[in-house]
Image 1 (cartoon, rainbow over the protein chains, first blue to last red):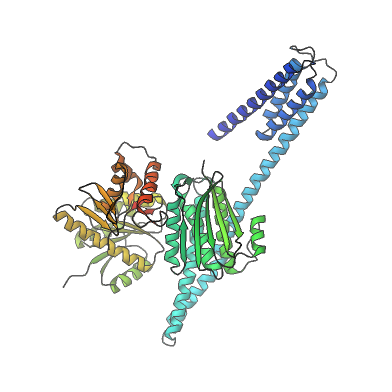
Image 2 (image 1 turned 30 degrees about the vertical axis):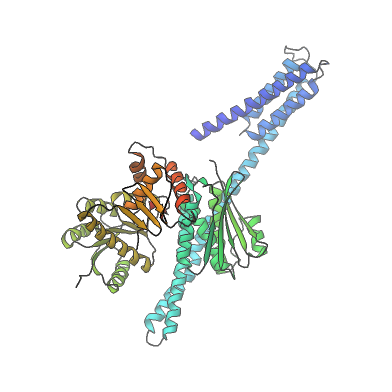
Length: 353
Length: 235
Protein backbone atom coordinates (compact mmCIF):
# COMPACT_ATOMS: atom_id res chain seq x y z
CA UNK A 1 0.00 0.00 0.00
CA UNK A 2 2.67 2.48 1.06
CA UNK A 3 4.56 1.41 -2.02
CA UNK A 4 1.72 2.40 -4.36
CA UNK A 5 1.42 5.76 -2.58
CA UNK A 6 5.15 6.25 -2.98
CA UNK A 7 4.82 5.43 -6.69
CA UNK A 8 1.97 7.90 -7.06
CA UNK A 9 3.93 10.69 -5.38
CA UNK A 10 6.89 9.95 -7.64
CA UNK A 11 4.66 10.05 -10.74
CA UNK A 12 3.09 13.35 -9.70
CA UNK A 13 6.46 14.95 -8.96
CA UNK A 14 7.91 13.78 -12.29
CA UNK A 15 4.88 15.03 -14.22
CA UNK A 16 4.77 18.44 -12.55
CA UNK A 17 8.55 18.79 -12.83
CA UNK A 18 8.70 18.09 -16.55
CA UNK A 19 5.67 20.27 -17.32
CA UNK A 20 6.97 23.24 -15.33
CA UNK A 21 10.37 22.93 -16.99
CA UNK A 22 8.86 22.86 -20.48
CA UNK A 23 6.47 25.72 -19.71
CA UNK A 24 9.31 27.82 -18.28
CA UNK A 25 11.54 27.07 -21.22
CA UNK A 26 8.79 27.93 -23.69
CA UNK A 27 8.01 31.22 -21.95
CA UNK A 28 11.70 32.10 -21.95
CA UNK A 29 12.06 31.30 -25.65
CA UNK A 30 8.88 33.16 -26.37
CA UNK A 31 10.21 36.31 -24.70
CA UNK A 32 13.46 36.23 -26.62
CA UNK A 33 11.75 35.56 -29.88
CA UNK A 34 10.15 38.92 -30.68
CA UNK A 35 8.67 37.71 -33.96
CA UNK A 36 6.46 35.50 -31.82
CA UNK A 37 6.66 32.54 -34.09
CA UNK A 38 7.36 30.37 -31.18
CA UNK A 39 4.23 28.23 -31.49
CA UNK A 40 5.93 25.83 -33.92
CA UNK A 41 8.63 24.61 -31.54
CA UNK A 42 6.54 25.16 -28.45
CA UNK A 43 4.09 22.53 -29.66
CA UNK A 44 6.99 20.23 -30.41
CA UNK A 45 8.36 20.77 -26.89
CA UNK A 46 5.02 19.86 -25.37
CA UNK A 47 4.73 16.74 -27.51
CA UNK A 48 8.17 15.75 -26.28
CA UNK A 49 7.13 16.43 -22.68
CA UNK A 50 4.00 14.30 -23.06
CA UNK A 51 6.05 11.53 -24.64
CA UNK A 52 8.59 11.53 -21.81
CA UNK A 53 5.93 11.68 -19.10
CA UNK A 54 3.98 8.79 -20.63
CA UNK A 55 7.18 6.78 -20.83
CA UNK A 56 8.40 7.28 -17.26
CA UNK A 57 5.14 7.24 -15.32
CA UNK A 58 2.88 4.27 -14.62
CA UNK A 59 -0.44 3.90 -16.41
CA UNK A 60 -2.29 6.28 -18.71
CA UNK A 61 -3.42 9.02 -16.36
CA UNK A 62 -0.32 11.20 -16.13
CA UNK A 63 0.32 11.26 -19.88
CA UNK A 64 -3.28 12.23 -20.60
CA UNK A 65 -3.28 14.89 -17.90
CA UNK A 66 -0.08 16.27 -19.39
CA UNK A 67 -1.68 16.37 -22.85
CA UNK A 68 -4.66 18.33 -21.53
CA UNK A 69 -2.29 20.71 -19.76
CA UNK A 70 -0.17 21.03 -22.91
CA UNK A 71 -3.14 21.81 -25.16
CA UNK A 72 -4.46 24.42 -22.75
CA UNK A 73 -1.07 26.03 -22.13
CA UNK A 74 -0.19 26.27 -25.82
CA UNK A 75 -3.60 27.72 -26.44
CA UNK A 76 -3.36 30.26 -23.61
CA UNK A 77 0.24 31.46 -23.83
CA UNK A 78 1.57 30.74 -27.23
CA UNK A 79 -1.17 31.11 -29.81
CA UNK A 80 -2.99 34.24 -30.83
CA UNK A 81 -4.73 35.80 -28.92
CA UNK A 82 -1.95 35.63 -26.31
CA UNK A 83 -2.85 35.20 -22.62
CA UNK A 84 -6.41 34.21 -23.52
CA UNK A 85 -8.15 30.99 -24.48
CA UNK A 86 -9.42 30.65 -28.02
CA UNK A 87 -10.97 27.32 -28.88
CA UNK A 88 -12.00 28.27 -32.40
CA UNK A 89 -8.51 28.05 -33.95
CA UNK A 90 -8.52 26.10 -37.19
CA UNK A 91 -5.89 23.48 -36.35
CA UNK A 92 -6.96 23.10 -32.76
CA UNK A 93 -8.69 19.71 -32.79
CA UNK A 94 -5.74 18.26 -34.70
CA UNK A 95 -3.23 19.38 -32.07
CA UNK A 96 -5.43 17.95 -29.38
CA UNK A 97 -5.92 14.60 -31.11
CA UNK A 98 -2.18 14.39 -31.87
CA UNK A 99 -1.19 14.99 -28.25
CA UNK A 100 -3.73 12.52 -26.89
CA UNK A 101 -2.62 9.90 -29.40
CA UNK A 102 1.06 10.34 -28.54
CA UNK A 103 0.26 10.03 -24.88
CA UNK A 104 -2.01 6.99 -25.20
CA UNK A 105 0.31 5.08 -27.52
CA UNK A 106 3.39 5.74 -25.42
CA UNK A 107 1.62 4.78 -22.21
CA UNK A 108 0.34 1.60 -23.83
CA UNK A 109 3.83 0.69 -25.04
CA UNK A 110 5.38 1.47 -21.69
CA UNK A 111 2.81 -0.56 -19.81
CA UNK A 112 3.32 -3.48 -22.13
CA UNK A 113 7.09 -3.26 -21.75
CA UNK A 114 6.81 -3.21 -17.99
CA UNK A 115 4.51 -6.22 -18.07
CA UNK A 116 6.94 -8.07 -20.30
CA UNK A 117 9.83 -7.30 -17.97
CA UNK A 118 7.81 -8.54 -15.04
CA UNK A 119 6.83 -11.68 -16.92
CA UNK A 120 10.45 -12.31 -17.78
CA UNK A 121 11.53 -11.91 -14.15
CA UNK A 122 8.71 -14.25 -13.12
CA UNK A 123 9.74 -16.76 -15.75
CA UNK A 124 13.35 -16.68 -14.56
CA UNK A 125 12.22 -17.30 -11.01
CA UNK A 126 9.88 -20.08 -12.11
CA UNK A 127 12.67 -21.64 -14.10
CA UNK A 128 14.97 -21.58 -11.11
CA UNK A 129 12.31 -23.13 -8.94
CA UNK A 130 11.72 -25.74 -11.63
CA UNK A 131 15.44 -26.53 -11.87
CA UNK A 132 15.67 -27.01 -8.16
CA UNK A 133 12.57 -29.16 -7.97
CA UNK A 134 14.01 -31.26 -10.75
CA UNK A 135 17.21 -31.38 -8.78
CA UNK A 136 15.40 -32.83 -5.79
CA UNK A 137 13.23 -35.25 -7.69
CA UNK A 138 15.77 -36.45 -10.20
CA UNK A 139 19.30 -35.40 -9.40
CA UNK A 140 19.12 -36.47 -5.79
CA UNK A 141 18.49 -40.03 -6.91
CA UNK A 142 21.96 -40.46 -8.37
CA UNK A 143 23.99 -39.61 -5.25
CA UNK A 144 21.48 -41.41 -3.04
CA UNK A 145 21.84 -44.51 -5.19
CA UNK A 146 25.61 -44.48 -4.89
CA UNK A 147 25.49 -43.82 -1.14
CA UNK A 148 23.05 -46.67 -0.59
CA UNK A 149 24.95 -48.91 -2.96
CA UNK A 150 28.35 -48.23 -1.43
CA UNK A 151 26.94 -48.71 2.04
CA UNK A 152 25.30 -52.00 1.10
CA UNK A 153 28.54 -53.20 -0.46
CA UNK A 154 30.41 -52.34 2.72
CA UNK A 155 27.88 -54.05 4.96
CA UNK A 156 27.30 -57.20 2.97
CA UNK A 157 30.80 -57.92 1.69
CA UNK A 158 32.83 -56.56 4.56
CA UNK A 159 35.08 -59.64 4.67
CA UNK A 160 35.59 -60.00 0.94
CA UNK A 161 36.65 -56.39 0.30
CA UNK A 162 40.23 -55.25 0.40
CA UNK A 163 40.97 -52.26 2.60
CA UNK A 164 41.63 -50.24 -0.53
CA UNK A 165 38.21 -51.09 -1.94
CA UNK A 166 36.63 -50.17 1.36
CA UNK A 167 38.34 -46.84 1.39
CA UNK A 168 37.21 -46.13 -2.16
CA UNK A 169 33.62 -46.88 -1.22
CA UNK A 170 33.84 -44.64 1.83
CA UNK A 171 35.29 -41.86 -0.24
CA UNK A 172 32.46 -42.30 -2.69
CA UNK A 173 29.90 -41.95 0.09
CA UNK A 174 31.66 -38.82 1.33
CA UNK A 175 31.78 -37.20 -2.10
CA UNK A 176 28.14 -37.87 -2.86
CA UNK A 177 27.07 -36.60 0.55
CA UNK A 178 29.02 -33.42 -0.14
CA UNK A 179 27.17 -33.00 -3.42
CA UNK A 180 23.86 -33.38 -1.60
CA UNK A 181 24.97 -30.86 0.99
CA UNK A 182 25.75 -28.36 -1.73
CA UNK A 183 22.32 -28.84 -3.30
CA UNK A 184 20.61 -28.45 0.05
CA UNK A 185 22.46 -25.19 0.72
CA UNK A 186 21.29 -23.82 -2.60
CA UNK A 187 17.72 -24.90 -1.96
CA UNK A 188 17.87 -23.10 1.34
CA UNK A 189 19.09 -19.95 -0.40
CA UNK A 190 16.15 -20.04 -2.75
CA UNK A 191 13.71 -20.31 0.13
CA UNK A 192 15.36 -17.19 1.54
CA UNK A 193 14.79 -15.31 -1.72
CA UNK A 194 11.15 -16.30 -2.08
CA UNK A 195 10.32 -17.09 1.51
CA UNK A 196 7.93 -15.49 3.98
CA UNK A 197 9.03 -12.01 3.04
CA UNK A 198 7.86 -12.47 -0.54
CA UNK A 199 10.26 -11.72 -3.37
CA UNK A 200 11.97 -9.13 -1.20
CA UNK A 201 15.12 -10.01 0.64
CA UNK A 202 16.19 -8.50 3.94
CA UNK A 203 19.21 -6.31 3.37
CA UNK A 204 21.48 -4.95 6.07
CA UNK A 205 24.70 -3.03 5.53
CA UNK A 206 27.63 -5.44 5.65
CA UNK A 207 31.39 -5.05 5.39
CA UNK A 208 32.09 -7.19 2.34
CA UNK A 209 35.49 -8.44 3.45
CA UNK A 210 33.77 -10.24 6.35
CA UNK A 211 31.61 -12.19 3.93
CA UNK A 212 34.59 -12.99 1.74
CA UNK A 213 36.56 -14.17 4.76
CA UNK A 214 33.73 -16.43 5.90
CA UNK A 215 33.22 -17.95 2.45
CA UNK A 216 36.90 -18.58 1.83
CA UNK A 217 37.27 -20.14 5.27
CA UNK A 218 34.36 -22.53 4.64
CA UNK A 219 35.77 -23.34 1.24
CA UNK A 220 39.19 -24.01 2.70
CA UNK A 221 37.69 -26.45 5.18
CA UNK A 222 36.09 -28.38 2.32
CA UNK A 223 38.99 -28.20 -0.12
CA UNK A 224 42.15 -27.89 1.96
CA UNK A 225 44.44 -28.53 -1.05
CA UNK A 226 43.16 -25.54 -2.94
CA UNK A 227 44.97 -22.28 -2.39
CA UNK A 228 42.85 -19.17 -1.94
CA UNK A 229 44.21 -15.66 -2.04
CA UNK A 230 42.13 -12.65 -1.09
CA UNK A 231 42.75 -9.04 -2.02
CA UNK A 232 40.89 -6.16 -0.37
CA UNK A 233 41.12 -2.42 -0.93
CA UNK A 234 42.34 -0.17 1.87
CA UNK A 235 38.86 1.34 2.13
CA UNK A 236 36.31 -0.98 3.76
CA UNK A 237 33.37 -1.50 1.43
CA UNK A 238 29.96 -1.36 3.09
CA UNK A 239 27.11 -2.70 1.03
CA UNK A 240 23.50 -3.56 1.85
CA UNK A 241 22.89 -7.27 1.35
CA UNK A 242 21.58 -10.51 2.73
CA UNK A 243 24.92 -11.74 4.04
CA UNK A 244 24.16 -15.45 3.98
CA UNK A 245 22.97 -15.29 0.37
CA UNK A 246 26.08 -13.46 -0.79
CA UNK A 247 28.20 -15.96 1.10
CA UNK A 248 26.35 -18.71 -0.77
CA UNK A 249 27.16 -17.05 -4.10
CA UNK A 250 30.86 -16.93 -3.25
CA UNK A 251 30.81 -20.50 -2.00
CA UNK A 252 29.17 -21.67 -5.23
CA UNK A 253 31.70 -19.82 -7.37
CA UNK A 254 34.62 -21.17 -5.33
CA UNK A 255 33.29 -24.73 -5.44
CA UNK A 256 32.73 -24.48 -9.17
CA UNK A 257 36.37 -23.55 -9.51
CA UNK A 258 37.44 -26.50 -7.38
CA UNK A 259 35.16 -29.10 -8.90
CA UNK A 260 34.50 -28.09 -12.48
CA UNK A 261 37.47 -26.02 -13.62
CA UNK A 262 39.87 -28.66 -14.86
CA UNK A 263 43.47 -28.10 -13.87
CA UNK A 264 42.66 -25.32 -11.42
CA UNK A 265 44.84 -25.25 -8.31
CA UNK A 266 44.48 -21.67 -7.22
CA UNK A 267 41.66 -19.17 -6.77
CA UNK A 268 41.81 -15.50 -6.11
CA UNK A 269 39.06 -13.30 -4.71
CA UNK A 270 39.31 -9.61 -5.49
CA UNK A 271 37.22 -6.83 -4.02
CA UNK A 272 36.81 -3.50 -5.71
CA UNK A 273 34.44 -0.64 -6.35
CA UNK A 274 33.00 -0.17 -9.82
CA UNK A 275 30.53 2.60 -10.74
CA UNK A 276 28.32 2.65 -7.67
CA UNK A 277 28.67 -1.09 -7.25
CA UNK A 278 30.82 -3.32 -5.12
CA UNK A 279 32.51 -5.91 -7.29
CA UNK A 280 33.57 -9.29 -5.93
CA UNK A 281 35.50 -11.34 -8.47
CA UNK A 282 36.44 -14.99 -8.17
CA UNK A 283 39.28 -15.89 -10.53
CA UNK A 284 40.60 -19.40 -11.13
CA UNK A 285 43.47 -20.77 -13.19
CA UNK A 286 41.56 -23.72 -14.66
CA UNK A 287 40.32 -24.52 -18.13
CA UNK A 288 37.76 -21.73 -18.33
CA UNK A 289 34.14 -22.28 -19.27
CA UNK A 290 32.99 -23.89 -22.48
CA UNK A 291 32.19 -21.14 -24.99
CA UNK A 292 28.77 -22.55 -25.85
CA UNK A 293 27.83 -22.85 -22.17
CA UNK A 294 29.10 -19.35 -21.46
CA UNK A 295 27.13 -17.93 -24.37
CA UNK A 296 24.03 -19.71 -23.18
CA UNK A 297 24.45 -18.34 -19.69
CA UNK A 298 24.78 -14.81 -21.07
CA UNK A 299 21.98 -15.06 -23.62
CA UNK A 300 19.13 -16.25 -21.56
CA UNK A 301 18.92 -17.99 -18.31
CA UNK A 302 15.45 -19.25 -19.23
CA UNK A 303 17.24 -22.12 -20.94
CA UNK A 304 17.42 -25.23 -18.85
CA UNK A 305 20.67 -26.95 -17.98
CA UNK A 306 19.00 -30.23 -18.90
CA UNK A 307 21.34 -31.02 -21.78
CA UNK A 308 24.43 -30.81 -19.59
CA UNK A 309 25.84 -33.84 -17.80
CA UNK A 310 25.09 -34.57 -14.16
CA UNK A 311 28.02 -32.70 -12.68
CA UNK A 312 27.81 -29.79 -15.11
CA UNK A 313 24.15 -29.48 -14.27
CA UNK A 314 25.03 -29.15 -10.62
CA UNK A 315 27.36 -26.26 -11.37
CA UNK A 316 24.69 -24.85 -13.68
CA UNK A 317 22.11 -24.88 -10.91
CA UNK A 318 24.70 -23.30 -8.66
CA UNK A 319 25.19 -20.54 -11.21
CA UNK A 320 21.43 -20.06 -11.64
CA UNK A 321 21.13 -19.61 -7.90
CA UNK A 322 24.03 -17.12 -7.95
CA UNK A 323 22.39 -15.14 -10.73
CA UNK A 324 19.03 -15.18 -8.95
CA UNK A 325 20.64 -13.93 -5.75
CA UNK A 326 22.44 -11.19 -7.68
CA UNK A 327 19.18 -10.13 -9.33
CA UNK A 328 17.33 -10.14 -6.02
CA UNK A 329 19.93 -7.64 -4.78
CA UNK A 330 19.48 -5.44 -7.84
CA UNK A 331 22.94 -6.47 -9.00
CA UNK A 332 24.29 -8.88 -11.59
CA UNK A 333 26.57 -11.84 -12.16
CA UNK A 334 29.19 -11.62 -14.89
CA UNK A 335 31.12 -14.58 -16.29
CA UNK A 336 34.06 -14.31 -18.65
CA UNK A 337 37.04 -16.43 -19.62
CA UNK A 338 40.36 -14.89 -18.62
CA UNK A 339 42.97 -14.17 -21.22
CA UNK A 340 45.64 -16.40 -19.76
CA UNK A 341 43.09 -19.20 -19.15
CA UNK A 342 40.63 -19.76 -16.35
CA UNK A 343 37.32 -18.18 -15.48
CA UNK A 344 36.54 -14.83 -13.92
CA UNK A 345 33.14 -14.69 -12.22
CA UNK A 346 32.13 -11.31 -10.83
CA UNK A 347 29.27 -10.46 -8.54
CA UNK A 348 28.19 -6.83 -8.71
CA UNK A 349 26.10 -5.41 -5.88
CA UNK A 350 24.78 -1.85 -5.77
CA UNK A 351 26.33 0.12 -2.89
CA UNK A 352 23.16 2.15 -2.34
CA UNK A 353 19.59 1.08 -1.62
CA UNK B 1 43.70 -41.23 36.99
CA UNK B 2 41.65 -38.40 35.65
CA UNK B 3 38.05 -39.28 35.05
CA UNK B 4 36.63 -39.12 31.53
CA UNK B 5 34.56 -36.05 30.69
CA UNK B 6 30.88 -36.85 30.61
CA UNK B 7 28.87 -35.52 27.67
CA UNK B 8 25.10 -35.46 27.44
CA UNK B 9 23.73 -35.78 23.91
CA UNK B 10 20.20 -34.36 23.62
CA UNK B 11 18.78 -35.42 20.28
CA UNK B 12 15.61 -37.17 19.18
CA UNK B 13 17.00 -38.69 15.97
CA UNK B 14 18.42 -42.12 16.84
CA UNK B 15 20.64 -42.00 13.74
CA UNK B 16 22.43 -38.87 14.93
CA UNK B 17 22.58 -39.99 18.56
CA UNK B 18 24.04 -43.30 17.42
CA UNK B 19 26.94 -41.91 15.48
CA UNK B 20 27.60 -39.12 18.00
CA UNK B 21 27.90 -41.59 20.86
CA UNK B 22 30.19 -43.79 18.78
CA UNK B 23 32.65 -41.06 17.88
CA UNK B 24 32.53 -39.42 21.31
CA UNK B 25 33.01 -42.81 22.98
CA UNK B 26 35.95 -43.60 20.69
CA UNK B 27 37.56 -40.32 21.67
CA UNK B 28 37.53 -41.06 25.37
CA UNK B 29 34.33 -39.37 26.48
CA UNK B 30 31.62 -40.90 28.56
CA UNK B 31 28.30 -40.44 26.76
CA UNK B 32 24.79 -40.02 28.18
CA UNK B 33 21.69 -39.67 26.02
CA UNK B 34 18.40 -37.82 26.30
CA UNK B 35 15.72 -37.92 23.63
CA UNK B 36 13.64 -34.91 24.69
CA UNK B 37 13.83 -31.65 26.61
CA UNK B 38 12.29 -32.88 29.85
CA UNK B 39 14.63 -35.81 30.06
CA UNK B 40 17.54 -33.50 29.24
CA UNK B 41 16.74 -31.06 32.08
CA UNK B 42 16.38 -33.94 34.50
CA UNK B 43 19.68 -35.51 33.50
CA UNK B 44 21.59 -32.23 33.59
CA UNK B 45 20.55 -31.69 37.19
CA UNK B 46 21.00 -35.30 38.31
CA UNK B 47 24.04 -36.45 36.35
CA UNK B 48 25.96 -33.15 36.15
CA UNK B 49 27.53 -33.65 32.69
CA UNK B 50 30.70 -31.74 31.76
CA UNK B 51 29.13 -30.57 28.48
CA UNK B 52 25.81 -30.79 26.68
CA UNK B 53 25.30 -31.30 22.94
CA UNK B 54 21.82 -29.99 22.28
CA UNK B 55 19.55 -30.28 19.24
CA UNK B 56 17.08 -27.40 18.97
CA UNK B 57 14.24 -29.34 17.34
CA UNK B 58 13.11 -31.53 20.24
CA UNK B 59 9.71 -33.23 20.28
CA UNK B 60 8.42 -31.83 23.58
CA UNK B 61 9.91 -28.33 23.86
CA UNK B 62 12.14 -26.01 21.89
CA UNK B 63 15.83 -26.37 22.57
CA UNK B 64 16.02 -22.62 23.27
CA UNK B 65 13.88 -23.20 26.34
CA UNK B 66 16.26 -25.89 27.52
CA UNK B 67 19.14 -23.42 27.27
CA UNK B 68 17.37 -20.70 29.22
CA UNK B 69 16.22 -22.99 32.02
CA UNK B 70 19.66 -24.59 32.38
CA UNK B 71 21.32 -21.16 32.46
CA UNK B 72 19.19 -20.20 35.47
CA UNK B 73 21.32 -22.42 37.66
CA UNK B 74 24.21 -23.91 35.70
CA UNK B 75 27.13 -22.76 33.58
CA UNK B 76 27.69 -26.16 31.97
CA UNK B 77 28.93 -25.69 28.38
CA UNK B 78 26.10 -26.07 25.88
CA UNK B 79 26.88 -26.80 22.24
CA UNK B 80 23.88 -26.35 20.02
CA UNK B 81 23.71 -28.70 17.04
CA UNK B 82 20.93 -27.72 14.71
CA UNK B 83 19.62 -27.87 11.16
CA UNK B 84 18.39 -24.29 11.56
CA UNK B 85 20.72 -21.94 9.78
CA UNK B 86 18.89 -18.63 10.10
CA UNK B 87 20.77 -15.86 11.91
CA UNK B 88 17.93 -15.27 14.34
CA UNK B 89 18.16 -18.85 15.65
CA UNK B 90 21.90 -18.47 16.22
CA UNK B 91 21.53 -15.07 17.85
CA UNK B 92 18.78 -16.41 20.10
CA UNK B 93 20.89 -19.34 21.22
CA UNK B 94 24.00 -17.25 21.89
CA UNK B 95 22.08 -14.56 23.76
CA UNK B 96 20.46 -17.20 25.95
CA UNK B 97 23.91 -18.45 26.88
CA UNK B 98 24.84 -21.23 24.45
CA UNK B 99 28.61 -21.67 24.13
CA UNK B 100 28.68 -22.76 20.51
CA UNK B 101 26.37 -23.31 17.55
CA UNK B 102 27.10 -25.98 14.98
CA UNK B 103 24.87 -26.35 11.94
CA UNK B 104 24.00 -29.72 10.44
CA UNK B 105 25.59 -31.24 8.46
CA UNK B 106 28.91 -31.05 10.28
CA UNK B 107 32.06 -33.14 10.12
CA UNK B 108 32.99 -35.27 13.11
CA UNK B 109 36.42 -33.65 13.27
CA UNK B 110 34.84 -30.22 13.62
CA UNK B 111 32.45 -31.39 16.32
CA UNK B 112 35.22 -33.04 18.36
CA UNK B 113 37.39 -29.94 18.14
CA UNK B 114 34.56 -27.74 19.35
CA UNK B 115 33.61 -30.06 22.21
CA UNK B 116 37.23 -29.96 23.32
CA UNK B 117 37.30 -26.16 23.17
CA UNK B 118 34.08 -25.85 25.16
CA UNK B 119 35.38 -28.17 27.86
CA UNK B 120 38.68 -26.27 28.09
CA UNK B 121 36.77 -23.01 28.42
CA UNK B 122 34.66 -24.26 31.25
CA UNK B 123 37.76 -25.36 33.13
CA UNK B 124 39.55 -22.10 32.45
CA UNK B 125 36.50 -20.17 33.71
CA UNK B 126 36.45 -22.25 36.85
CA UNK B 127 40.11 -21.65 37.68
CA UNK B 128 39.85 -17.96 36.75
CA UNK B 129 36.99 -17.56 39.19
CA UNK B 130 39.27 -18.77 41.98
CA UNK B 131 42.36 -16.72 41.14
CA UNK B 132 42.99 -13.01 40.66
CA UNK B 133 41.72 -11.44 37.42
CA UNK B 134 44.18 -11.76 34.56
CA UNK B 135 46.23 -8.71 33.64
CA UNK B 136 46.73 -9.50 30.00
CA UNK B 137 45.51 -11.57 27.09
CA UNK B 138 47.82 -13.21 24.62
CA UNK B 139 47.01 -14.60 21.16
CA UNK B 140 49.83 -15.11 18.69
CA UNK B 141 51.58 -11.78 18.28
CA UNK B 142 48.66 -9.93 19.86
CA UNK B 143 48.70 -8.79 23.48
CA UNK B 144 45.90 -6.99 25.25
CA UNK B 145 47.19 -5.30 28.40
CA UNK B 146 44.15 -4.63 30.59
CA UNK B 147 46.01 -2.66 33.28
CA UNK B 148 47.55 -0.17 30.91
CA UNK B 149 44.66 -0.17 28.41
CA UNK B 150 47.05 -1.02 25.62
CA UNK B 151 47.03 -3.34 22.65
CA UNK B 152 50.38 -4.57 21.39
CA UNK B 153 51.28 -6.34 18.18
CA UNK B 154 54.71 -8.02 18.24
CA UNK B 155 55.47 -5.86 21.26
CA UNK B 156 54.75 -2.61 19.42
CA UNK B 157 51.94 -0.32 20.50
CA UNK B 158 48.86 -0.34 18.27
CA UNK B 159 47.08 2.99 18.30
CA UNK B 160 43.42 2.26 18.89
CA UNK B 161 40.68 4.74 19.68
CA UNK B 162 38.90 4.35 22.99
CA UNK B 163 35.93 2.60 21.35
CA UNK B 164 38.24 0.32 19.38
CA UNK B 165 40.08 -0.64 22.57
CA UNK B 166 36.77 -1.38 24.30
CA UNK B 167 35.76 -3.70 21.47
CA UNK B 168 39.09 -5.56 21.44
CA UNK B 169 39.17 -5.96 25.20
CA UNK B 170 35.55 -7.14 25.31
CA UNK B 171 36.25 -9.81 22.69
CA UNK B 172 39.50 -10.90 24.32
CA UNK B 173 37.91 -11.25 27.76
CA UNK B 174 35.32 -13.51 26.13
CA UNK B 175 37.78 -15.24 23.82
CA UNK B 176 36.41 -18.39 22.22
CA UNK B 177 32.81 -17.25 22.50
CA UNK B 178 30.70 -15.56 19.87
CA UNK B 179 29.53 -12.13 21.03
CA UNK B 180 26.34 -11.09 19.25
CA UNK B 181 26.15 -7.62 17.67
CA UNK B 182 23.48 -6.52 20.13
CA UNK B 183 25.36 -7.59 23.22
CA UNK B 184 28.54 -5.89 21.95
CA UNK B 185 26.69 -2.67 21.16
CA UNK B 186 25.23 -2.65 24.67
CA UNK B 187 28.52 -3.32 26.38
CA UNK B 188 30.58 -0.86 24.35
CA UNK B 189 28.17 2.02 23.77
CA UNK B 190 25.74 1.48 26.64
CA UNK B 191 22.20 0.11 26.84
CA UNK B 192 20.50 3.04 25.10
CA UNK B 193 22.26 2.67 21.77
CA UNK B 194 20.07 2.25 18.67
CA UNK B 195 19.72 -1.12 16.98
CA UNK B 196 21.81 -0.12 13.97
CA UNK B 197 24.97 -2.22 13.88
CA UNK B 198 26.69 -0.24 11.18
CA UNK B 199 28.87 1.75 13.58
CA UNK B 200 30.15 -1.50 15.08
CA UNK B 201 30.98 -2.91 11.66
CA UNK B 202 32.82 0.21 10.61
CA UNK B 203 34.84 0.19 13.83
CA UNK B 204 35.62 -3.47 13.27
CA UNK B 205 36.84 -2.78 9.73
CA UNK B 206 39.19 -0.13 11.16
CA UNK B 207 40.43 -2.41 13.94
CA UNK B 208 41.15 -5.16 11.43
CA UNK B 209 43.16 -2.75 9.32
CA UNK B 210 45.31 -2.01 12.36
CA UNK B 211 45.66 -5.59 13.65
CA UNK B 212 45.36 -8.00 10.75
CA UNK B 213 47.80 -8.59 7.94
CA UNK B 214 44.88 -9.30 5.61
CA UNK B 215 41.48 -8.05 6.81
CA UNK B 216 39.77 -10.64 4.59
CA UNK B 217 41.65 -13.50 6.23
CA UNK B 218 41.55 -12.36 9.86
CA UNK B 219 43.57 -14.21 12.48
CA UNK B 220 42.58 -12.32 15.63
CA UNK B 221 38.96 -11.29 15.23
CA UNK B 222 36.64 -13.62 13.37
CA UNK B 223 33.13 -13.01 12.06
CA UNK B 224 30.10 -15.20 12.57
CA UNK B 225 28.08 -13.85 9.65
CA UNK B 226 24.88 -12.11 10.63
CA UNK B 227 25.46 -12.99 14.29
CA UNK B 228 28.53 -11.34 15.76
CA UNK B 229 32.29 -11.50 16.33
CA UNK B 230 34.62 -13.69 18.30
CA UNK B 231 38.25 -13.95 19.16
CA UNK B 232 40.00 -17.33 19.20
CA UNK B 233 42.03 -18.20 22.28
CA UNK B 234 45.63 -19.21 22.56
CA UNK B 235 45.95 -22.96 22.02
